[in-house]
Length: 371
Image 1 (cartoon, rainbow, N blue to C red):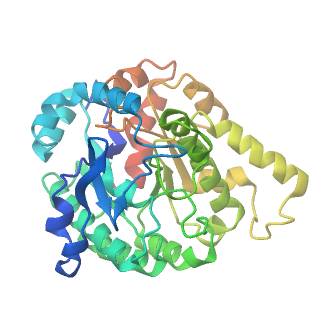
Image 2 (cartoon, rainbow, N blue to C red):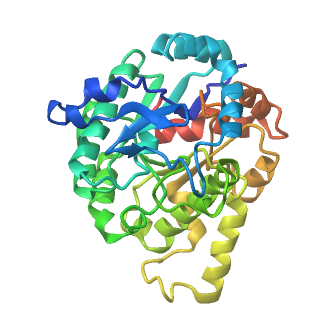
Image 3 (tube, rainbow, N blue to C red):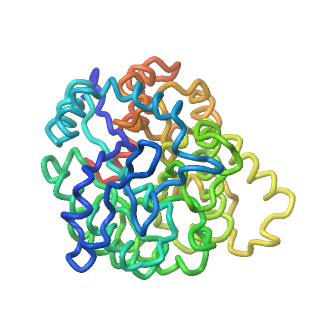
């Protein structure tokens, strides 16, 4: 608790030790497990299926020396936790120091791996199981405070269904998917219908979170640097994913599906609802017969969007959309995250305490099954 308010960080990350992929993967895939390798030019990185897990050159590259230097500076605030290997004890100590009651944890390297198509989909499913088993074990140190989001192999929807059911039974609190098209399929594609059925039945939220420099199509690939690509990729991908799920009938068919957008900011939300409403006013559901209600109605019944504490547009979001649809995130412990300053930043927002209470805890706690 922080200054009398409970706090849920709905976007925090694991910093996976490189060894977990080899140690936790099914033995049949051990010889093909992701591993650290020489990337050339004095760099090392994670490789799977014979190539780096992120694009190293071309558009939206990961390799920029300037970007890597900035990332190194950004990690200085996490020096003590890094020295302890970002262990559960180190994480919980950081949370206690700043009054954070719970975090929802997503992969770092695992999220980057989901940005590849994978030639061997069974290998991808094994990679997901390896991460999920390791993360579930990690979160068992404090299961009420460390809420794990299981990564799903969207490249193979049938295998994603199996993994969603398996991890839900083992204690996963949510499911993590990327917003990008996979194998030429947007999130609303009919191939994913069985997965949305399964997740709706399991009663746990699906969390949509982009990650940098993927091989999958990304708005970021229009740019020549990682920074410029990163600026547009996260919010633009989130906007398209939300529109896709609403306009193509996924929410109409799955009214109990909860969707949480994280690490994309929230300032775009009033504009995006306005944009969708304008098209509803113009053409209604002329091309989208499964759109039975106004777009904003679907948003308010099924979506949450996570904000940073320092967003100057946050009061406008609460005024124009409502404070019931926003959660809080810091991106701990990534170098471009807002930990720990984002906590004080949210407290300093020109918002009533009731709104801050909802954003810090109430809205997200209901979605992630916290008391």
